[in-house]
Structures are given as C-alpha cells and as structure tokens.
Amino acid sequence: MESSCHSSQAPLRVAVFCNTFLPISQTFVWDELRSHDRYLAEVFAWQRRNRNLFPGAVHVASPWFPLTRRNARFDRLLAAGRHSLIHAHFGWAGVIAARFARRHTLPLVVTFHGLDVAALTTGNITPPQLWPYTLYAREMLSQLTLGLCASAELLEMLVTAGVPRASLAEHRLGIDLVQFRPGQRDDKVLRVAMVGRFVEKKGFADGLRAFARFADSHPEPTELAIVGSGPLDHELRSLCAALGQQSRVRFLGALSHQEVATVLARSDVLLAPSVVAANGDRDSGLLSAKEASASACVPIATRHGGIPSIIDDGTTGFLVNEHDVEGIVTHLRTLANHPNLRRSMAEGARAKMMREYGLRESVRNLERFYDDAIVRYKSKG
Image (cartoon, rainbow, N blue to C red; front, side, top):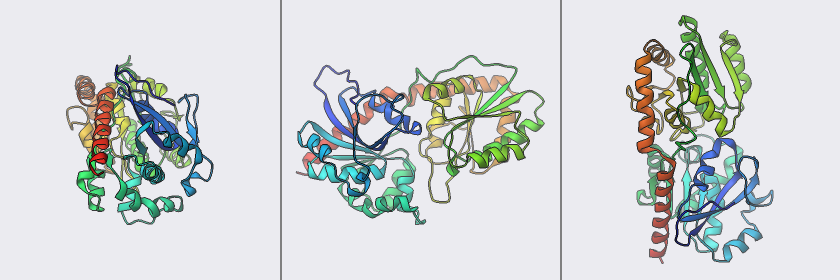
C-alpha cells in the first residue's frame, strides 16, 4: 500500500514494517499511513488481515519470515534504492526490519508501543512466542537510528535498559478529529463505554465492578457498552452475569473504527481503567481516551502510562489510581448528578484534543522525525 501524498515536491519513500497488516486494534498505523504529506509509505508485512478495512497493495512475506528474517522479494524492492528509510511498528517488527536496514544501508526507525518494551525491561518471564524477539532485540537496539516511544514512560524504561537517550524521542499518536466528534446524546439515559482488547492491561474487570456498584445505586437509567474482543471474553461475560448486570451491559464485539466513533459519539462517559499486567504489559498513550475526548465523551481513567498527559484531571476528565474501583464509582456519580459539569468537561476534552492531538499535526511531527533520522544516519557515515 502507498499512502497519499499532498506535497508539491517529489515525496521520499519509507518502508513500513509490520508483523501483521493490520489488526483492528492497530488502526493508528493505518491513520498514519494515509495521512502523510511529504513521504510515501510502502508496507512490508508477514501476514495480511482485514483487507476490506485496510485496502491497498501490501508486500507479504513467507510463513517462516519471523524466524528467518529473510525474504528475497523484500530485498529486491529495497535494493532498487527507492526508499530513504525503514520504519517498524513495535519492537518485534523492528528486529526483523533491522536486518534489511543493515543490508541495504538504510536508517532504522522503530516505534515502541508497550509490551515490546516491557518484555525487555521488567525481568518477568517472557512468553515463548516472544523469545525470538528478546533474543535479537539488543542487536536491533544497537543499530537503531531513532526510537519513537508512544509515552514518556516507555522512553524512560528504554533509557534504564541502556538505550542512549539521544537515540529516543516521544511521539504521541494523533487521532482523526473529523471521524471522532460529538454526536446527539440522550439526556434520559447515562451511557457509559469501555473500548479495547479483552486483555489484563485494559482493567475491564475493574470497570465492570465500578459500573455495577454505580448502576445499582443510581436512580436513573444507565447502560454500559463494551467494545472489543480477546482472551478474557468469557471471564468478563461471567463477571457481568455474577454482578447481575446483563440487562444494563451490552457486549458489542470488535468494531470498525467508524463503528467505534458512532458508539463514542453517543456515550457520555468512557471508562479506561488500565493497569500494568502481570507480564509487564501496559498501555502507553491510550487511543480510546483520546478518541472519547474528541467525541466529547468524558473519560475516567487511571494514572497509567501516558494517560495523564491526555486527561487534565478534574478539567477534561478524571484520573484514579490503578484498581481504584471506588474512585471510579465516585466520579461516575459526580458526572451523573451534575450534567452541566459533564458538558463543560466534555467541551474541554474536545478542545484539548484539537489543540494537542490532531492526526495531521502528529503525522507532520512523524515526518520531521523521519527527516532527523536520515540526517543522523548520514552524519554517522
């Protein structure tokens, strides 16, 4: 796939490496690809998924690609000399991309998103599927031209692990402010949402417990829409039943980005109770909190990863400590009982996203990082 390019100057090409192109949970990659101005992005991937949602040409490798880290077609394309750099999303794609960058003397940029950093820095036992990554990660990090971290926390973790600070930068992902915008809301029902994969780090069990305690004592109608899927699906549904919330909670499954936008546009509150998982996995700059804020849906989230930079506590949303179920309940009651405050915070949340997290400006920053990586690489000779 080649991204659109709006500049009048001839664009530079970037080879974007992904393990899989593209899970719905990684729509942010697609948003970046389609929003470039001065660069053309060409995708190199191990697997192809969701072609109907993410169309276009993608170069796909063989099934053994993650182990061999070799592909003759990829080499032929990169040997043609049309690309100015390689950009990998997630550290495990960076390990694969590093070998191609070295063979074809190209700058290597890697964006780190969460578990790819935790697997290298927390000391926990890494699941077997990540062993090839941890085996070759140090080689990739030593070759890195520029590492882009989705939060300041991830950057500091990599510095602690020995990566030179000068080789790292924080890059906050932007959101589409046209797609995510306020919609019509029903004042007779308080609508709450949770959006994300059903994995431990999302903290959805805490969110369900908090919603149940709030809803059981709130006199007005309220409902919770849960968007997503994943390994904890059965566990969350069982918890919902045990809490007696089947009539108030809807499990909507995995939805497209546009469908998520529709849910958030009509929701009043987002619960984002993220936690650090037992394996060290964590959220960085939580996109659902940004998307909800852009939709004028007030977020209640944890002080976790990059979330405090997204939410101004008490002004554009509320922050609680991880696993603070009672804190979430308190803020739900405040927002339910004070609709004028809720509307004021919703307006402030949308304004903050417009000032700080627009997709276009985020991609302009990314392109400036690309420029910097090319200069750095050339200066090293």
